[in-house]
Length: 517
Image (cartoon, rainbow, N blue to C red; front, side, top):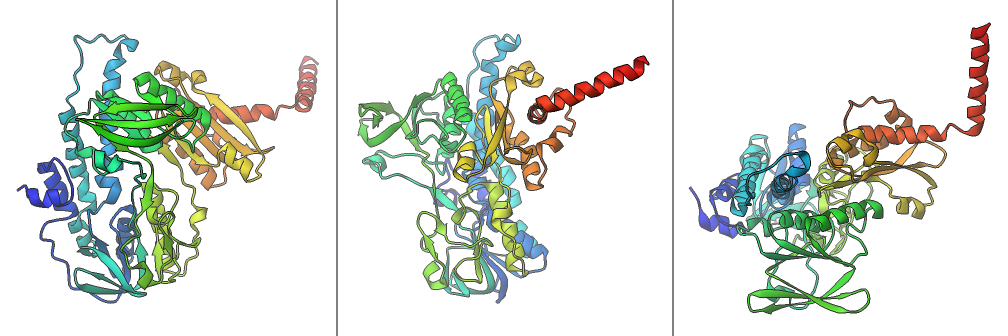
């Protein structure tokens, strides 16, 4: 039965049956916590990816574990991040496929119509379906003591939640991050959306202004444009996805423009004002000229801040700051040697998969005399625009800054048969190797399914394999993975120096003479 008050208490909209089903899993009404079984081997504060992985892993190893979450189990990934955003992107991709069908000889009778309410209903249904993996009941069945409420450290070895005190041998802070909202004059008064609220929409804004051209801003700009909004994307950088390879970002930028997104960059947003039902974004370009964009809704996508306030970190002796979050060493230990941190609250890599593997690092170091280092992890990432942009390791700029001399090999998709056949030949695969060797130091892919392809380079980097090893790995034909193999071919051709060619020519001439004799 739908408990509208319980749904509304967690800010979920539109308070439908799927949201109620979600909450029944990740914050059940009337949840009865167990009596504390002090002391715990591990107390986990935060039930997002890092916290859930650590709690389940520790319990499987036989540890006594308590998991504390004040909001929704599953954290940002399940509730307001990866899961709902990728459901939305899939619907947007379907729109683009219909729009572009004529390119492939498919004629459609009449115009396709986007049912935005149905798109969002599908999103909420799938989110609720997947929530069983993060359910309070599931973790209780695994042997984890689940406490739903606001947890605060009250000392270096204890934490309080719902009037109960939990004591521990080790603790993990995994409270994640929240949207960073810039101090733009008039923004709060005008009203705005973030990733925490945008997935509650049931009607598509006719005009949507997005502030921030990072991964979240770019993904949602393309998605909403395809679903029927006129999107204006404002970004302070010279190109979108400022941390990525400029050539790769340019391909994504062109794709957004082709979809109809209006790009304003580089600009500085000065203020936001209400004009009757409209919201007006006032901004200034690089030449100092002022402009305004009139929209119906504003989405703020300007990064994330770690959740560190009101956790009692001072009482626990844990050092932190509001920008970087909890301070940790290479082994993810805080200034209190009994307390560790993992995920967005302490890492620059604010990705679900990074939180997962950081939590595994904590388990080895907190429950056992491990010395695993977070820096030993090879962490790829991907922006799920169309085309996708994925990267692992160093960019060219980072390699230069680190004093690493590199050679770079680029394989355009226009020379990869599968990309040509699919009509998706924009983009490329770019790999950097240590100069004079085949040792990979970084790679960037901008292509359909780049997030899948980057795994080949991630494996090579994490296992010390060179480009020659990737070149020796046979890929099915025709696949996009051939682009990765072709970067190895490019490297191999550089080894065919004039001297090598001369020696090979001598050998082949000798072979011909021997055969003729």
